[in-house]
Image 1 (spheres, helix red, strand yellow):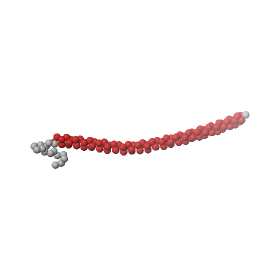
Image 2: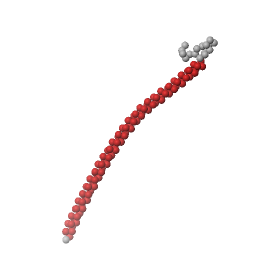
Image 3: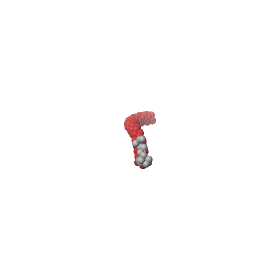
Image 4: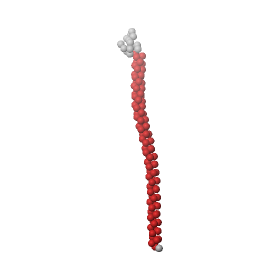
Length: 113
């Protein structure tokens, strides 16, 4: 006989049947609760792994964003320098054209005299 089997009393009736049923029910409820707890724990562990991967992805993306912003600032600086150089070149071209036009006008006025 096991610890969970009811003992028969002198009349042959199971004297511990009610307590064994209650014990069996309690045991089943405990097992179900433990199974739910283990499932929740496994889910949390899984999420923690996902959370770590998410944190790593977030950190990598933040670093990529910082690098992109640094490149953007560098490109803005290069663009500003190129714009200034183009402005100076345009001013030189205008000055050269103005000087050439002034020289042509002077030549034309001298030719008329």
